[in-house]
Image (cartoon, rainbow, N blue to C red; front, side, top):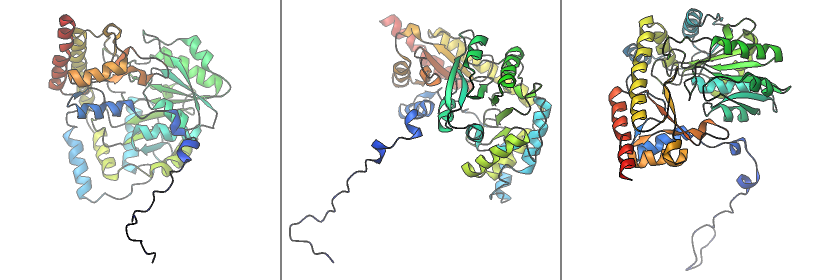
Length: 406
């Protein structure tokens, strides 16, 4: 044993810091952490009302909780079949046939995933070759750009106009020989846009003419307003073998923490998705899959009541935001209000921090939904109890007092 000289330090010299992280590039270098989740952490730190992250602060249906507890006590706590429990895939197939007008084999064309987030990532990894291009309508849910980059693709952003219409010429110009996929999100986060049948038909024709796959995120499909209808692009003629339809239980059934979603695609696409899914996550939580079967057994009145409840909530927040000086329009679907803050004279990030620290309400800076731009936008969610929204509106009303005082 090495002897220590009297008076000598007994501490081992710290090893030299590796230069690996400063010299070796990584996919993670090309994007930031989630701004939405960052705003949640700020809301917690400042005891603010969290209208940033889109999760309900009210309970999910009791039938789901009962089914989840029953499954746990029945010891359904081990692996389910990798691509999803048989009864859940059968229930998804029946629901999608009824609501979306699409028919999928539970055995070969449905993959249950760890939320729609994994469904999107597994789908992109399954079809993308490094250097391929992916068309992303802008503004977009913040995951889509990083998902493209992680999969090795180059995102090409196509703006949605301020009136929420699509510019057909811009879409045509975005298609190149490298185009591999188009990402759709309808109803859209953050704008609330619901793509019309005519718009979807145009995009479907682009996919068919240029041999491009549509990856469509439809997790808000039951949250629609003013008589609008949800249409799945995969139901169009010629799109059944070139569409990956992504769904989730998170938003429709108010269980965002369960992380159970699914990807629907023809057998060849599904075979690829399942291989990626297997090595990404193995499978979604088994007892929660059983509870999701119970969710799909809820009556049609559940979906009508859901939309009606969110319609009331969107109007509460819309009126409060307008009174506080925000410029915004009522969304067509989903549960977000995308506001213009140009008249407040602050950037989106500065104003979002100000709202958290001084007003006690958290929102998401608009620039997180753009690859370049959005500095005059903020997104608020109304997936909260009525009393939570009313409290937030009262806090936001302080902006008027500040304005008059200055």
